[in-house]
Image (cartoon, rainbow, N blue to C red; front, side, top):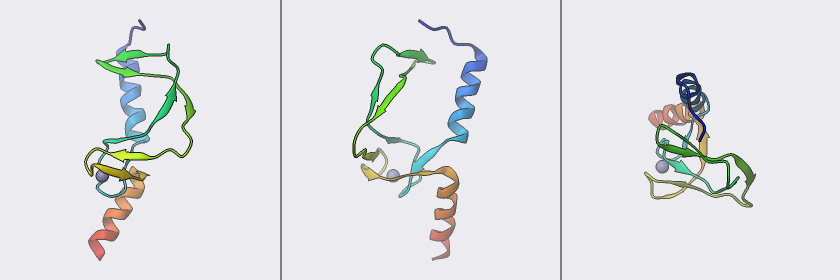
Length: 89
Ligand SMILES: [Zn+2]
């Protein structure tokens, strides 16, 4: 199995923060999508499995664990905008 370094884990964390997408309804990070992953590409980092992304699934639908419903993902910066607009209403 691939050994992870402190730097790799820090890079991964930064990548998550920069590229964070959240639920457009509640802002939760706990959204999921189906993908095709390379079966033999699994690595474990900090106890979490990561797979190499292979392909999109046709008609991808997203799921929010917080809403317990279908969701649309928005970038964290868009969510900040949505929150502001909701407050102004
Ligand atoms: Zn949600």
